[in-house]
Image (tube, rainbow, N blue to C red):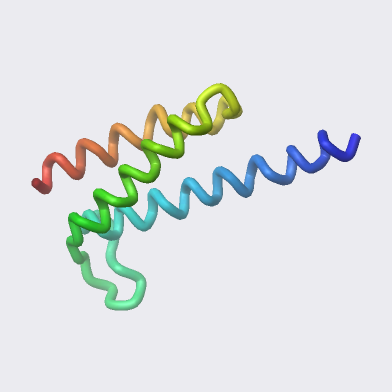
Length: 88
């Protein structure tokens, strides 16, 4: 029972982690204003590092993701890649 209960707690934390990385990538792509400056700033190197990290994370967790986590990767990762491609 302990294992089951802890997996319920971990799943939202993992999605929050993925959301945090995605938000950072969107900030670096200039899609969202930087929280400190309130300006849209572009840092393609940082955005690429985050996108590459998300790709690696998806590959390393393949077969161990919940349906929501799969959906997250399948919908937001291509969107980030497209936005990056449009900026380069």
